[in-house]
Length: 221
Image (tube, rainbow, N blue to C red):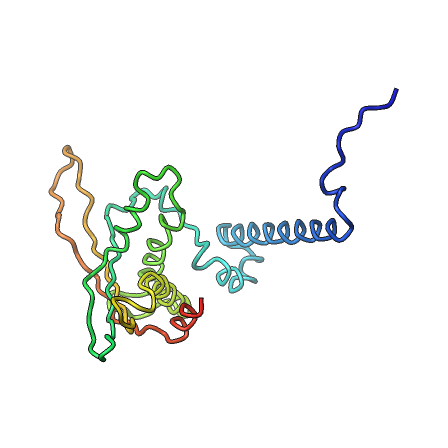
């Protein structure tokens, strides 16, 4: 009686170049995953000889996209609603400059997520973390206090807002953008003592000039 044999594995059915390509792809993905896990581990682990020796490389890899924090488990979690707003200065075809109104970028993200059972992780965190990264590396006078990380945080926030406005708006060229944050206190429960202010407090950043390089890349795409 002939033994029952299932169909050959899909990879085994591939040609030799195909099998080599699959093996290389699996190897690259595995190495990348291990590298990512190692970097995150060194970032969140207690200070040790290895993390100190490679501190610069770990920071360059983690910030800003993969930053880790423990705010979810903090004994005093955030009690504020922060909406990042932005406006643009547009040069009209005749040369005149026009300033748009303030656009609630955070509100747009929230509206896009509402009623969506699988909201985008980017919509939930990109702008929020970019603003947090900026405020962590700049003082109240908008002066940098974290060296190269300050420059990185400013460029990261600027790039996000610049991409959202685009290089052209209302028939003109976007030449500058400005950001601000509107912060309101989360209302206290009825049994808590003290009243909560419902008015918003604003932190307004200086105008940023739109880089010609970024605008050129967007037009090329």
